[in-house]
Length: 334
Ligand code: SAM
Ligand code: SF4
Image (tube, rainbow, N blue to C red):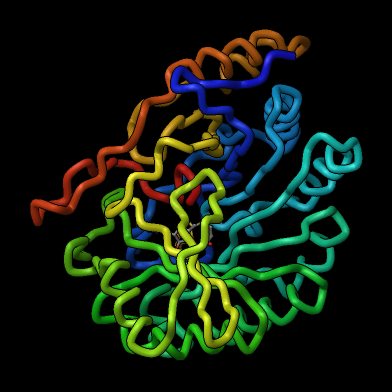
């Protein structure tokens, strides 16, 4: 099988899959309060998701990250996770993982471990109960903390993803860092990205540059840059005083595109070759119109990869939000 390589000689080995656009939270930087969600018939069924992911795995994808919306609110999603176990057992496929808000982990952490998941990214922007309720609108911190406990008790390695938000969690930088260290969890900060209409919230007002955040961290710790790369926008440092590793996802201040190894599938079967561009390919038709053969789907995937752009165009540097894309993060999957 010829592997998936794009026009810039980047091998595509990582697929992120949004399995639903729905969520039990309404984080202010991600969604507006009144979201219109897709009708069910638009969504790939669990069987179609299996066929889609299995085809990517056959073409060389080694890592799947399941996301959303909130992946664990999709009905019967464990059936899908369990169906992917066979690829892990077969050997070439290396990692099945997910990004979650943690609200359903108390219920599902054990099942995820059983299905072969070993690591999970959990999004958490504050440890203050009231601020948590404010930022997620519908979320409750104790439920998420119980989910984190359940994940660790089940044996899952946890990474906390924190969106850096000016005037919101600046004052919790050290509290969050120490909390993650004390619980032996990795921590990654994310810069807020201009995705989707979020109502009255102000993008530039939310933007806390991660270079400023790093400078703050340096006031207390010695940070050493690590060479580690995962093919995405994350860059890592080691905190010399504690040995803790901290990640920074800085799509707006860094160009990470030269080593990009990933593409993103939406819950309706559109493939986005770049998080920061509108171009996409409809894979659902290739799948639904040919129930008995995967060859047209394989060809549609190859054609899409041949169109993968060189990079994104997000830019806040002129004090306006340039390169904005119209879809929400929950549509493409963060
Ligand atoms: N619901 C799950 C969760 O919250 O982890 C998975 C989907 S969520 C869209 C994935 C990640 O995207 C979360 O860590 C969230 O904080 C982040 N995110 C959402 N909107 C964002 C934005 N506009 N800029 C930066 N990160 C964003
Ligand atoms: Fe839901 Fe995740 Fe978006 Fe928050 S960031 S609204 S939890 S999809």
